[in-house]
Image (cartoon, rainbow, N blue to C red):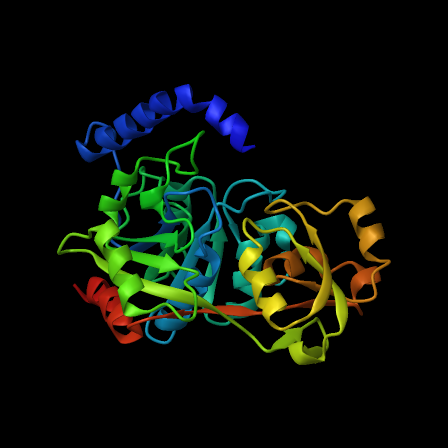
Length: 334
């Protein structure tokens, strides 16, 4: 894979130019963005996947849901439906996508969960509902310049920060590093638990945020209890199991499990993997399966897995949490 990326290096300048020019046309107003009276907070990244957008959306929901009517709007990747869809009691990962279905399962009493590949249409549909939201969280739409979000949150991982990366196909960036200039907040995600101030200062120097941008650091907080549809299990009680992941970057999870000295084999699928009948037949032979919450949304309805399937919940912990919350709410009350 790395060799192929080096071979494709001559293509990189053309991709860079195309994405840079597209952004410049939006910046100059030649290509049109649409803004809205309802506050729109966009969460996204410059790189291809794996920066922690889903837990950040969930964190924002917990920050805002007690004071505002909140809606999430996602594309609904790999769903089997088209157009605008609202999450409801009859929904599933197939109707709205695995991540939106996760939002719905966790927060259905507190937020509206919607999907639409056309983000402009999705926002307008939400605004026209009788119970219209007061703030919309736009999931994975940093490059969706047709919508002018009022507030942009850019995520980048500590291990693979955008300022050390290159645009596709040689690197993992969807657009040039200068795209970070659109962010109101930059969050360095998946930081080690022991990150010290010296390490933070080095990262801050490389980000070189302007005076109107805020930079925060976050880390993943893993639960100590596994959940299933009907049962719970302590992580410390695990002996041996099969770990099943279909996410962009499973390394933080495997690192966590290894620090617990746990014995497991790992079936590592691509992000948003659609589990085939052969996959399910193979998994049915396992005695105990541990997976991510996102993957659980796609596996939980298989009867043959019901008594053996557990997921490990995660959350994010943001440093300077009060400042983070105040920055978000300052936008909403401006």
